[in-house]
Image (cartoon, rainbow over all chains, first blue to last red; front, side, top):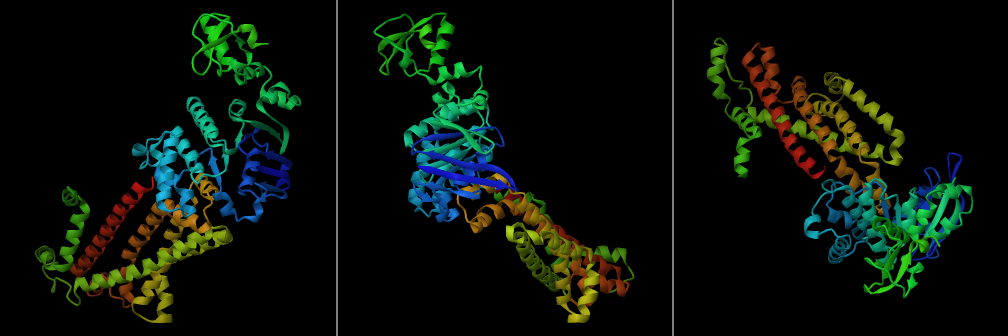
Length: 307
Length: 246
């Protein structure tokens, strides 16, 4: 659990983070969402003490972070940044092994761990271990960057717009991968982005930031359905809200159990926006729904989507 | 395969020519005899060329090693937070060191410490510091900020950042500074002969004093080959380094 307790940061008399309090429970993916200059990156960087605080305290698992040396603290926290910051003179392997080696793990354990991470990020060790960062595509570099951040198995992962510089298709794949890793490992993640779509996709909770303060801190669905004020409403995009809501709700929530329909069944965990897309493409207003095992369990209609 | 590549490289041919002339300057006797029929002796004979070369090499190695160590240490110092205030001052001092002609340095040092090799070493050291500091500072400044940020965020200590990240990434620039400095030192060391240091410049100055042009040519050719060969060897080292540091 991470607690930011009335944290303030000033630069040259300008308050960048203003009396900010935030609690992130273990296993959450908390997204700090805001435009540039909102203080979201500074907030993130205060958690691993790349930026010092002027007031307030930050605790991780109940321990005040200033009681640890910055190096010790940072080796316990994974850190991934937009431009990856991979060491250009080290191979993929050595890059991922950075923090375990700083922690003086025995080399056999390092080897096992790096191999595990290459597998986790679907980078074939035989192909990738000896490559240098400049030999990788942007998406591959970013995966190595995240793998490096996870190498020492930290409980907490800080990510500063890690996917902002890659193309939309790669970004989508990386987000899927991060979701998979997050579900698989149960890490606590604090993720900074200015992209509302990315936030809705990854977050279990979203903190919308403006001028160094948190405007609203809520689950993604709550944020869309009950934006606290005009600022949040504008930020999430008024017109697009409906479509975003559809992408967060699952077909299973609106299913008519026992009813039937013709056509290729939708999986129950598909989003409502997928259902809408399929209906539009097939020019139908009614589709069957199947469970995880592939058995048809009911149907969904166009009217159910907007219910 | 490797031998074949080695054979085809100009480094080997220049090296071979240099070694041959050092050991067997007599080989040039027919050419020099034809060009200067009235001069005797044709080949410099007050010291062997190999002796002169070793003394010359000693001066350059001593001065350049000292300049490299001091220059690199200063460059590291001024690029760390503690030393950033001294940055302008040290760069200015080094620049002054280079504007000062080595002859002028000799004119100051000889009265202080006497004739011989040491005034030359000092002059070469002072003169060679600037390219090393300038290049090393540029190299250290050129470490990408995102890489520095990552090294910090991973939890590397200042020392680990310096040795594992900053210096390796700056090494091509550092090397090119040393390369310039050493090449200049090889040429400049010849003037040490005017204050009693033994160098490949000795035949040049003796030849000028005694109007024996063949001596001048012999010394000049050897110094030039020495400088070219050294530069070529540095170029090879540089390629290797760049292969490892993209």
